[in-house]
Image 1 (cartoon, rainbow, N blue to C red):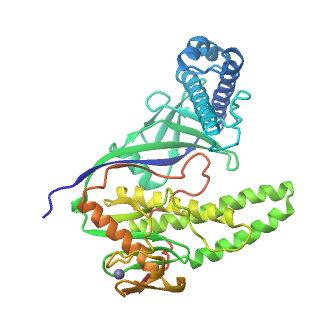
Image 2 (image 1 turned 90 degrees about the vertical axis):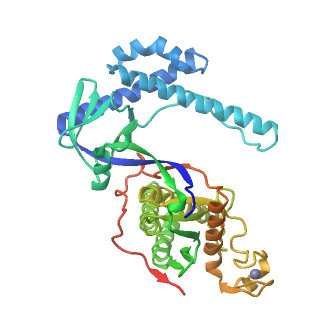
Image 3 (image 1 turned 180 degrees about the horizontal axis):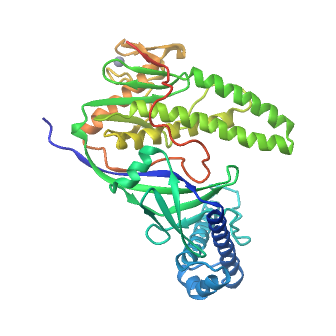
Length: 432
Ligand SMILES: [Zn+2]
């Protein structure tokens, strides 16, 4: 047996809890959130006009803390939180301004970054609350949240596995967001929970390589029979949504714009849902999964239509979303996923490593190595090469620990809770 190869893995899940507040509680929580937002805008304007756009946290605290407490009736922690968020917003803006100036000087860009030309304004009333100070959890699945008039205790509900994780005591609970969904008229608590774990990569009994693409959503090289996941059922739905989108874009009216926004949400939700199911299939106990590092690679899509750039971005988002889901789910379910160099994964010969565009004559369905004559289904080459690179990386001990975070469950996500179990299995074709 190989000696252990242990890497550290920090896993953060973002879980969404719906608060069942009664009429008075809801009104009180909303008033608190409004106060918090108004306080942030007050601090922001103050820093802009009185402090020459310098929003130093300590200075603002000295100058405004008492005033915020009285003027906005905020509890101590929330007053500090409002100041902290304004300070970090300013800091972020200054960083971007300096970076932009630098980039213009070096000629990387001609665009001027319009930051801090007026005081940053906070429109959302989403409130950041610190665990143990501004909120906590109590018996019978209740949360206690600090407001303008003391704590309120409300029942919450969430997706069962998430609630169990939250209550298990095995996860560290972080700073949450109190968020109001206007369309559903409901209050939510978005809570990040974190677990540190060590994984022995030599405990993984299987190594797989995942190649994402257009014809197949994914091809998984397993070392034995590859798995093809067909994209056609979802492509069909997506095309339907894209046609709708086009018609609305041509209309250009205000109601058309509103419907367009709803359409984008629907499209993302559809993609996200498919990705949830697909990644759940791939993330298995004791399976080491290699995925392509697409950070510096533009996803190629074949289309001659005008909306290419928009579609390309949508596809790129979909692939990135799938990848981050594979990363965190592998960790969650006792496997491990790692990114590997994606260059030439579709052109290299899995047998002799000869790499050339000519290995795929006429860009056809068949890969034929011009050096050794090895032939293979073209869609399988990528997955197999990623798998080989992952094996080599484990052998050479170049895989390092990482931080994985659940993507896309934030206050903007109004979609259903993550589907981690497969309800409608995707079309899986076992190839030979
Ligand atoms: Zn070859």
